[in-house]
Image (cartoon, rainbow, N blue to C red; front, side, top):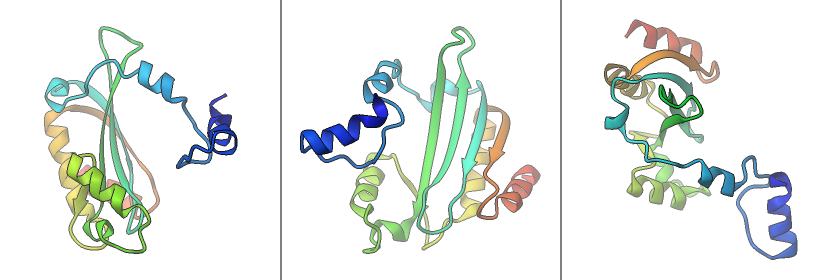
Length: 155
């Protein structure tokens, strides 16, 4: 039972985990990782986008889901993740070492300053719209999401 796995690991095997509950069993996740997701291989393909905005201490996520035209059971997912540059060295950020590592590996992007730069994020989405065939974008309405989506639509 994936939801009980972390409790078992920590309480019975003394194995430290970072999350209280597991949503997807890692073996299931690994079995479904069947091919690399590369920007160039996805160019021109239809996709559906979703943006979860943040402000200062959280992550901003831009996700694009690309249904496979040949195999309806496959979906390629391309995700871009940002945080403010200042979060990489903020001593109040308990994840700063992970953030620094993810940035070095190219998994985490940053915007200048101590708050997310929404103009920078919109520019990336516009650039992606020129590369991919974005059918629709869902925007989280928190953190000025309505204003963000209005400006994005204009761009």
